[in-house]
Length: 161
Image 1 (cartoon, rainbow, N blue to C red):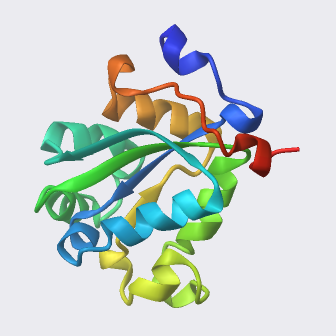
Image 2 (cartoon, helix red, strand yellow):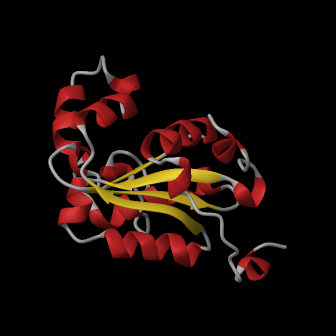
Image 3 (cartoon, one colour):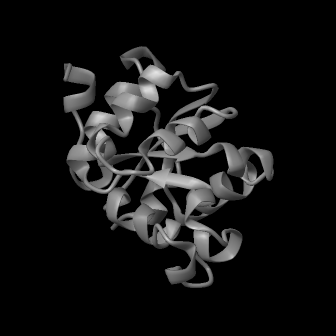
């Protein structure tokens, strides 16, 4: 990892990777998802609307390569555009996972993204990094250094003590 990715991984500078999957894009949930992260107080530092290549997806989901659903997952994620994002804020990795809900929407509480918008695990609308280490890896896989932006959020004094 280069210096840009190493510089800020703790406290209010923690970053996470979130992607709205093809079903979330098709269902026009991008704005609602961005709204939820913004209202929570997290800062958007990277955003791309893109068609993910099969190569990128295979690398992203490398840990799942031996699972029976792997090839179907790659096909699904390659079936349409995704919105890849990097969010920054205090405990953003852990908090984002709570905001997303459980991987299986049936186990997700109302008020979470998956609890509100999903029915089936194979169409669960959104991905979020599961640890700071995963976030670092995923951000460096999906974004170049020049695509991540440092900017001052004028609300930060109202969010953090």
